[in-house]
Image 1 (cartoon, rainbow, N blue to C red):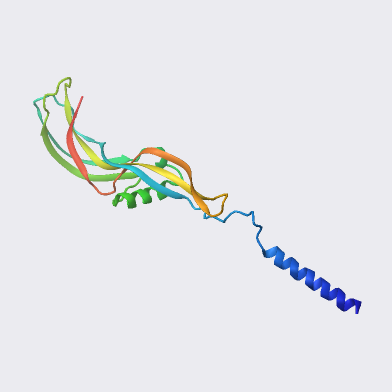
Image 2: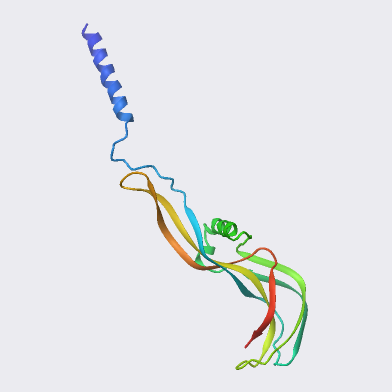
Length: 178
């Protein structure tokens, strides 16, 4: 009889312990998804000089440029380097509705001509190829528990003045003065 009562009491205590063990304490915070969230802002289109250019010429001279050369340009800004750069470029591409990346490069025969105009304070000019790029800031967030329950978005960092070249060959020729 003692054995039956002992077994019943043990079963009752173990059962209660299991129930108590599965109940979460009331003070425990919500489990939040810790995946980073990136937000793109301060968006603008910019044109960056490439290394494809003519020799310098004096004002009044018409420059003719025809060379087979590779034009290239690399992204700038702290958000464009490191392990997160690929994710940031993907997010920026979606935000701008155009593919951007770390580098752009194209080999071609570039043929253009333009006249160097007289500009006050400038003594020379040259044909310069500019490539389309996108300027932006990126902010990284994570979801964290709120003291009252649930989750809230918390800023981890913001990096401004990032410029990434568009992947397509969208170029602009102009005279660069000095």
